[in-house]
Length: 335
Image (cartoon, rainbow, N blue to C red; front, side):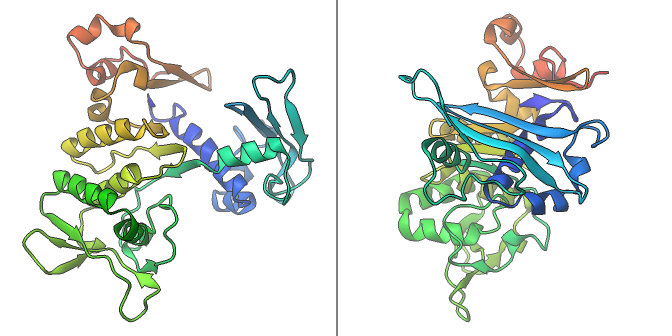
């Protein structure tokens, strides 16, 4: 997705983040940490009474409406799931009631088919945001060795996740190392082992080419650490069904962005990938049909997929990124 600041790219990513919190039964905590109900309702509760989500995917659909309460929380006005196989005349609907503060999708030990189908899909949608590489970020701290089932949204368990790949997926692990070296030729290898004093903990360590000295994540540049996280995510053997990335190009060298585009293209053969970007370099690596242009029109975010036929004559002389810069694609600031 490309578009001006404020066009709505992050809002779309935010919808999937909200869905993640709903599925994890962390809605109220998420609302509180995000600054309260006002942050979720368009122009506040004086203007907008409710927030509605209507999603259709495959043969399934999920619908819910969230309304604000006097204690600054959101409750479900309604929640329902539906599923319809191609041979069915009508969909099978399942109402999950109203008035609850957390989803009922995963509350029943024996859910019906609609809930099973919806929950399975929603649990496979993962958002990743590797921007925090500060000294206090989780990726630079000692972590739990057992926290290795999947890569966390902030790569906070990168060391544990890489350790599992090192022990069980040697070819994949070596591919990640080789890819990192394309961006950081000085990188030798990871040094991943349980902490000697506490075997249940692990820290991200590595060494340079031609050196036995160990370094930790604090010794990596922000851009290199983010690229390591991106390479690990996109080259892992089992991707989530849908991967969402918000401005993954942040802090990356132009060559690293070019390589990132190749990783995204390859990963898209195994999963659905949705990326929000402001990078002309990244857009230059894409085909027109890969790009969704986001524009803000009369207060609404409008999403439009590019078609090569629209810009075929321009592409004879200009790259896709140049056309974006010249405002021939849309996705630029406008009144």
